[in-house]
Image 1: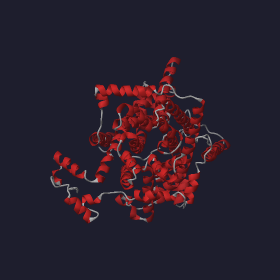
Image 2: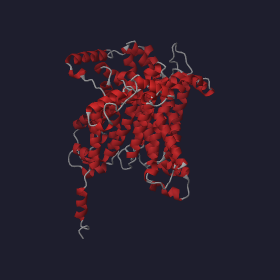
Image 3: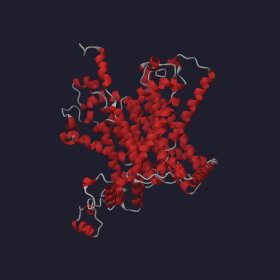
Image 4: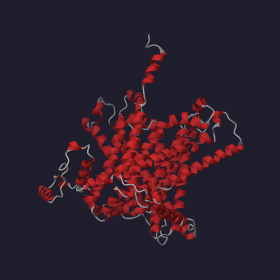
Length: 639
């Protein structure tokens, strides 16, 4: 009878330890330590007094140049036209990505493409177990490649095909966002418990009908929420993608930066902030309509069928109106070109569809044949390998130290010196820069977002009376409102200014390198994450707080809200880490170094085979992260 005693189960439970939490914490600490060992960090701007004084001087001069924006009527009109150009590119790119991403996600979602299967264990992840499983793997590989190549890199490639302009930016965004949305959509569909749509399948529905009538409706709210989030990111990215030929605000910012016209740059950045703020407000309004707790104070109340249907049709009509305007504006409605004349930016698309631009893709053949330098390691052409070996230029890895002497630090130094002769090893080592930036930057951003979530939360600042029963003094409510407004302003500015612009600012202080890129990633990540973190907290039913309230709002946040939200916070944090890896590659293009810098350098100097090796490393990095996250289920959305 001992096992039947309630204390027995409690005793068994007390013997369990959350070892997985300690493993996760240890892994994070190990990755952070590896980031500082594998990459070269320069903190002399902070540690050296002379360098620190020079850095503060540069920063003051840089910020002082922004104190007097150019508000002349002519330049304001020009900036407004560029803003509309940026918005049209983001809208068209996102719309195209939603359609393509939806179709690609249907193939890459196991629940949709493969359906029920008897395979278990390792066979369930083996792509050759069936034709449909192979199709699913091919679709996943396609989406990995599309999102692995950052939109900046897509823009660099597309400029060589269709030239400069907002259409290049729209297509670059579309290619990258297609891969991102396909991954998110497929993860959302695969994360739904099969028992929830089992009735549809039992009635005899095939895979497509099960998807359209069972899986898709269950994930529709989350799919729309992530689509809105991605649309906001598209607007921010469209504002800076012009730096590499994508048109819009980014093109003009990059042009004015090169001439040092900081008054004009500050005006353009203000327009960028206003654009991202508007997108943020619109997205917030739509998200409030999607609140899934009917008992929440801000949830939509039950309405008539006519009102519900009207709201849906009106939303669809607004989307179609925006897309129609974007198409018209990019083709015939803009006058942002020199001379103020409308320019048809859609003309390159006609040339692309007619095949006139395909001749510009000759370089792409060389890009798809990367230089792997196999002769240096004894493969490839035998004569070349022999000549390199006789000349001492071939890799002789275990000539001084054998593989069993791995415990000797000198062995690792000797092995690295030998591998430096191999071009691919230098490519692999260059990936440590974006990885180090993403790991450290994401960690700092997550910590900052968690600290900022409490003052950012609507529930804990303006509506605690809903679960505490308190009657606050009007001055206290004003103080809390000011605190929330300050936190939300910090979050908005942090995410409203893209990583590239933050990088420009901190390069002025720290100089080019990892530190500037890491701080830029951390600040932008904090702004993105604090929003979704606080939304997760505000979506918790207030009755959960009421049941556990212990007299302190902060205590309630720490012991109730944070544990409930923790799983979603970590999911969002891992999504942000994946995004930060791509962003860190982009920052390499503007002076941080690493993969992005070497790819752009070789591409611009027409060394397409070497650029292809760096591009292959960028893709391999994203695929490795994705496969590990799928295997460990780190990026599954549980909403």
